[in-house]
Length: 195
Figure 1 (cartoon, one colour):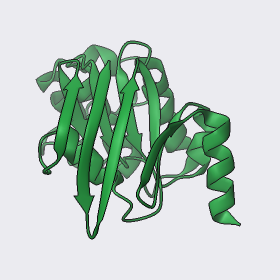
Figure 2 (cartoon, rainbow, N blue to C red):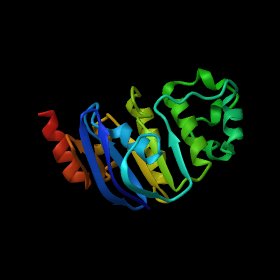
Figure 3 (cartoon, rainbow, N blue to C red):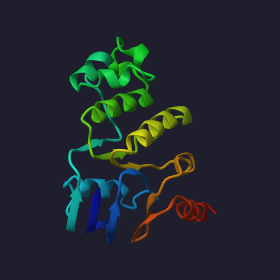
Figure 4 (cartoon, rainbow, N blue to C red):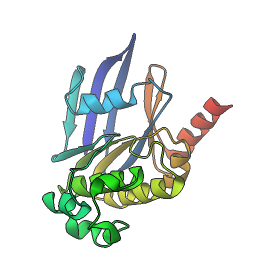
């Protein structure tokens, strides 16, 4: 469980969030510069805020621009004890390849497998599906959906259609208002932005 009761500054505005999150996947959506990544930084203690945050440990974080170590895919996974996780997934045929040769989506999946091997109870994922095709995005989203049965997973995304694919609650950043909304309400709000 994650309990958040904080206020923090993004540029000239102050955002306030007072929400409780049970296990599940929560998309974090909103326009550019609305405070989505800053919120994750607050949770990690990397951005000043007032109030309190309580998160089940361990906590793991996957940044937007993840770069693996300069070795094979298998070695990158073995270092984190994640080799077994990947043996059934799309990277299984690429374990011998240099990790730096992977596509952006494959690198993100590699990083995700590494953090999942740590068995976090709170997982923060920052725009890892940015600039990915739908197939790669869906692979990441499916892994997160499955894992979210045992953890609170926050996923920052700019891909509005991700909400349609995962159909889960969203933490919506709109101006100075931040609200946790059920899927259908979040979808209606997002569609109103696009009109």
